[in-house]
Amino acid sequence: MTLNLFDDAEQGRVWQEAICPGAVVLRHFALRYEVEIFAALDDIARQAPFRHMVTPGGFRMSAAMTSCGEFGWTADRTGYRYITTDPETGLPWPPMPETLGRLAVAAAMSAGYPEFVPDACLINRYAIGAKMSLHQDKDEPDLGAPIVSVSLGLPANFQFGGPRREDKTQRVQLTHGDVVVWGGPARLFFHGVLPIKNGLHPSTGEFRINLTFRKVSK
Ligand code: MD6
Ligand code: FE
Image (cartoon, rainbow, N blue to C red; front, top):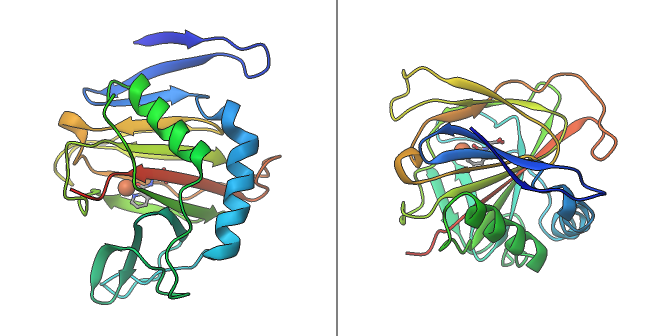
C-alpha cells in the first residue's frame, strides 16, 4: 500500500509503505528537518561523544552510539539498560532538541500512533561495514509506545522479521530521510541492519546515521 502524504516543491514527495501490521516506512519524511537535525547532532556529539559499547557477551558493537533526552541507552558487561547520565562524562545526557522531538511525534502521528511522546533518542553512527545483528527492542517498560527510527546518509538494508528470531525477514532498503515506525503488533519484532556498503553521501560522507526515538518512562 502506498499513501501520498504531501508534496513540497523543495523536498519532494513523502509517502508510506506498509511493512506489516504495526510497521510502516515513511519515505523521505525527515528530509524537511535535515538542516536542523545535523545542527542538533553536532551539538549532541560535542557534549556526549559517540562511543563503541561492549555487549554483555563481550563484543564491541560496530556502530558508534550516543544518546539525547531524559534517558540514554548503554550496554556493558553487566547488561543493557537506560540511564539518565552518560557514563563517559558523568553528566546528564544532552536534552532532546525540540526539532527532533517534533519530528518523532509527527512521524508517529502519521503512522497511526498519535499518543507518542519520546523521552529518549539513541543515535547510531555506522561506518562502512558496520551492522546491527537481529535483535528486539525490549528494554522499554511501556511496550504500548512505538519505536521511531530515522535514517540519514548512506543507505542501509534493514531486516524486519517477526516475533521469533527464526522468523523470515523482509529486507527494506532505507535511504536518506526515511523513517520507520513500528509498534502495536510489531513492537517486539526482530530487526537488524546488514553491513553498510561502501559509498559517499553528500550529507554524511562515509557514514550512515540512525536516530531511534523511544518512550522509556512508564
Ligand atoms: C537502524 N536500529 O539502525 C535500526 N536498536 O536502522 C536499531 O534497531 C536499534 O539503532 C536498538 C538500539 C539502537 C538501534
Ligand atoms: Fe533496534
